[in-house]
Length: 223
Image (tube, one colour):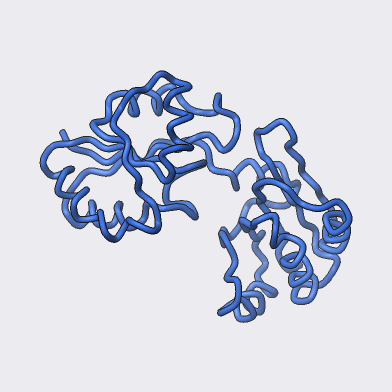
C-alpha cells in the first residue's frame, strides 16, 4: 500500500535514530532527501541501499505533483531532511498537504527534533511555549519582536551562527537585558554547549567567544 513516511534523522550523532526509522528506510521504494550527499552518509552508515532523489525548497514546487502521482500508483516513500523532523523549519509541509488532499496516507515517525532537547535542557519553564523557528531577516522582524515582547510563553527560535549575536542584541532592545535565555549549539555532537544566563550575559559571552554550529535559542516569556 502506498504511503508517505516522514522520517526524523539524527541532528548530529548518527546513533540517534530509531530501529523503526531504519526499517522504514530499508523498505521504502524511494527516499526523498533534502541533500542527497548528507543523507547518503546516514544511509551508508546503516547499510541502506535504496534509490534516493533530492527534495528541497528549491525544487519542491516543481516535483510535487509527480511525487504524488508516484505515491498514488503504489509507491512508498520516505522523506528525510539533513537533520531532525521533516517539516519543522525544513521541507515537508507542501508534500504532506498535497498527499492529504489526494488521499495518500501520511505517517510521521517520532524522533529527533533539535528544539525539544534544547527546551527541556534550558531550565526555562516549558509548560507553555511558542516555536518561532527562524526569524525574518528584514521584513516583519520589527513587527514580530514587538508582538513577542509581551508574550508570556517561553519562546523557541532557530538561528544561524552568523546571526546569533545580532539577534541577541535585538532581543535586548525589545525584551530587555534581563530575560533568562539558553543558547544550545552543536546538540548531540562532541562540542555540545548549553550557555544559560540573561540575554545580556549570553550576548556578551558569544560576542567575545564567537559562534560555531547549529543554534537553538530559548528565551523566557514576559513575567
